[in-house]
Length: 534
Image (cartoon, rainbow, N blue to C red; front, top):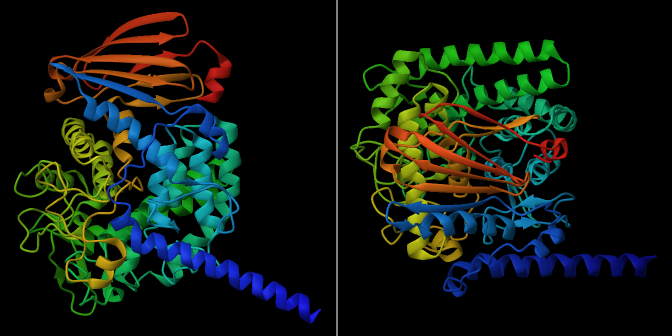
């Protein structure tokens, strides 16, 4: 018996040592030795079976007024290739499929997975569900962890967006499937909600991060110096982003509760969301600036840093209409957030703006959140303009660099002016001095923006519908979208003021239609089997 135990211990030590070696190799060498190679190969049908993906991804062809636009066409395809590359089969880390945000990030991350699922939902909803489920299954007690790797977990949590992402996913699948998935994940997500209420809620009813790393925006000027040599005590800061996420979470849990027939719990969550929104407006809104800010609960003072966190309450429906209009004024201001690639992490006119991670560059996850907020309040023209330029910026940067990046330059289509926590030698050693590449942890959301915001694709049990919203500078372009499941091809030609003339090919049937900006067009599929697969 002693010999067996010794052999088992030796085998475990060898396995752990091997994982450590692999982890260290990727951590230290990916951004350097492998930087010059191009790993994005086209996704072939024969490869999909190995990871349980049921069908090919959507395809997009884009023509400009003067001919093909390879940046958009190839960029859209390459997002899916990188997304597939970063999908991992079940292994010793996770018993279900999980997603890495990039090859150099060899772990399961909380809010990365929430956004990755929003990219997968347009390709294969079952993969999206597994990506969310992996985070929940790797929880520690009731707490969802910031990250979990083969070697360790995190003592922190991260922006609590899994319930929001699940609710968004469930709106795209048939009712019986949405109810089944809700029954699986609702209980642990409710327990996580209760854990946050007990462990992260302040006496004033708002929420504070236990550490800057929990926020996901750790070197933002509201929390930290550029190189993280100085970190704020976030435990006393009532945070607008955290509180907004909790409102979104409560809304999502209410939706899940209703799906499984628990109307009483749904009403409780809805009441919590309303009460928290009122507290945010009372305590975090700065009337002079027209923005939401962190508030120091010791001194009562605002932390007046004009970051994208100041805009995120729009996503959760917190502001009334006058407050929302003031936020939009900042969003469309070219001196603030309306940059070449829009929605930087810090406003251009803030004294702390610089092109270093969360101190100025554009991050697609928070930009996506602001666009969702604009849509929620009916600012569709503004959302269309910003979404189009955001997508164009990512695709054009891909065309120039051959890479997708963790974050983007708000003023140009390139990454040479960007930095990663300049002065932090450990970060430079482990991840390099520039944005991590092959990153689709949220950069892939540009594909979701094309489908959901610009084309306005909506899937229901019985039909597909589109509500196209293209900005004026898209005039003369042609978007041709193929959806393998169901097998449809949709072509849209953009005219003046965002009007479109479209063609739908469904099997052997071809239909033409026209729609004004924001006009919904219902497309009934011809096969019940196709409707179920969609």
